[in-house]
Length: 508
Image (cartoon, rainbow, N blue to C red):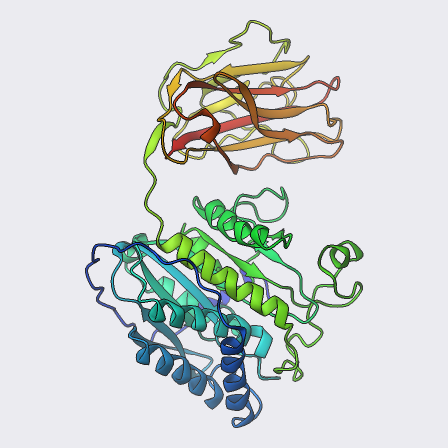
């Protein structure tokens, strides 16, 4: 995993010298067969790849770094495994710091060539050591997942492409080279990217990239679609009873170039040089006050520096994410509203609202700031959204919610009687430090019964506006005609509260 910031690697890309780019011809998609269940990836197989990486490092000065013989030997090992399994492979070369680097790109035949799921990990180590956790672990786990695809003769609906990146430790050089040199049309065909960098840390945590910004801090959400990738991975860990926590898209690994061009991303991470807290040790076990990986970027990052349980769980999570995402049938849209035109939403539908200012309306919002962004002047799509008092006014508090509750309700929506139904939408709730837990943004579904499907409470802290995404099952309302009811409240006195909703969608 890269230590430097996103700004550093972006500026450093100016020194990249283009050497070669490989264009792969995709096989037309066959009619997909029924997908097999996601496999249990054998831990022994993943560890066998790690043993190979260790042996390669031992034979090449103790390292598998960019420009060193150990890196090319690692790339050739990975490529030989994939060639034997029936992948179409290529070594994509580039030059950095006067040395040639390589990306290994592997395409599985079939799937929709206009709907590509990429799965990636960086293959290089730092010069100081063999890089078995960072990032032999991610490289070995996705390699064994790719080989499981072959063993099952998987026929995914999406086209599957795996990648092992070079020179990540020097600033994401390989992945940036790949993305920079893709024609715009080819970039547009990549609908998702899953990244796995350090998945076997000895003092492991279980982190999932925070695609929906539900943590409310850091770098914000990933591009649209990132939330679904996050939920898929979370679903797996939930199924095995392992709690996860969000980690931000901070630009430290190879998802960076993908999200920079709007490609949704996700993945897992078990921790690097950060220190495990007492709360995290209670959650996951291990040792508090100690780094997740005490051998991070050191010579001791060997096969002895791996937590087998974390590696096993993450390898299975990778397979689950690949099988679930790559074989998914595209959802059918039952209802959608981007609020670019009036479609019949009704403010204060019960004539019971108590807010005196900042009532919900559809419109083009004006930005306000107070210790950071409060009302967002940008929407998720188009120019309009649902917003609590769209005008900025003379100050940030001029048109925020005041005095109680404001609500707005959708027109009637008839849901089909069969199929899994999902409501999704984008949202934000912003408030000053004078807010409290009595303030909220809430979404309810009103049919034969009423159910709260989303509730974000305020707090006595400053929270800036940032678009996030949420989803909820509507299966309990199948076959009914329902309305979506959105309300927000400034219920704790004179506090600064703003909210917005955009891109409401129901799919089956």
